[in-house]
Length: 104
Image 1 (tube, rainbow, N blue to C red):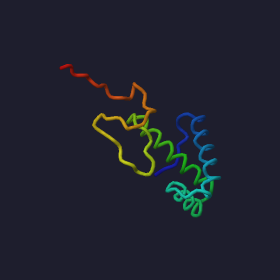
Image 2: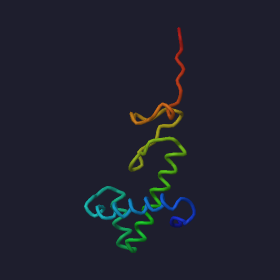
Image 3: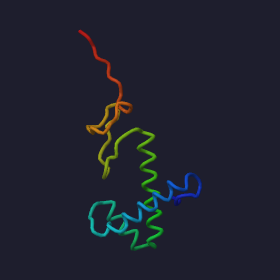
Image 4: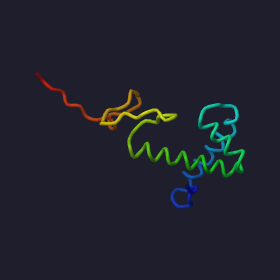
């Protein structure tokens, strides 16, 4: 995997990096899978490289969520497919699949 390229929106890239640096500061106090991954990465690499790696990972997650129009499912929880929305109340009407009411 490559890092974040310099193509695209510089402001968005800056926001992703700043967000990743903020997460780096508190990752050592947490024990979730992503924080453990980040702690291991910080042990092996420079903090700036770890911040770019996390920003890259977050950008890919955001892109996948936007293209698939789904909610974030942390820690590999299964997604509901076949046009069925998840149980989240955050889904908007635009992302819900239309239902057709049958009249008897």
